[in-house]
Image 1 (tube, one colour):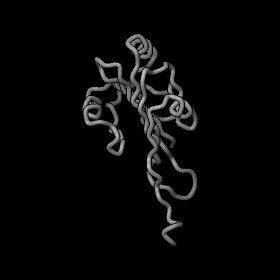
Image 2: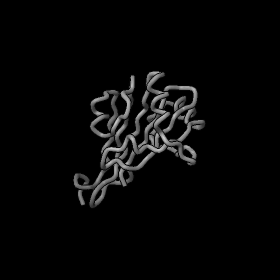
Image 3: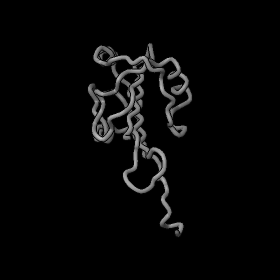
Image 4: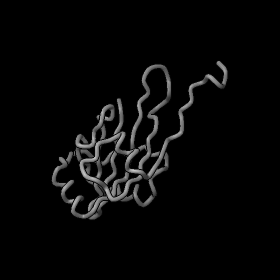
Length: 132
């Protein structure tokens, strides 16, 4: 097999535009600002390749409260996010105290697995969705 035909994992795509994020996920409330990362999960091979979207969503105070009132908390501990070093260290550290919620309100096929985390005392949510 030549180097040109060997399967390689394409680099993650990142952005701060709401329109691109809305093409991949459903946003039940319009955030004030977004940062997102779309990446391949695992290795590229034969058949379908799984991928994930990781997004940091900042909401207004009113939308934060409205969103929290509609989300269902899970009993799960916040998952370890495979972000490839993309999340700022302060954000990653704050997620240790985050509360995990069911993310089904954010699902858009084929992204139908994942969680949404809220950092207590902030207007920041971290959304992690992936295909399986």
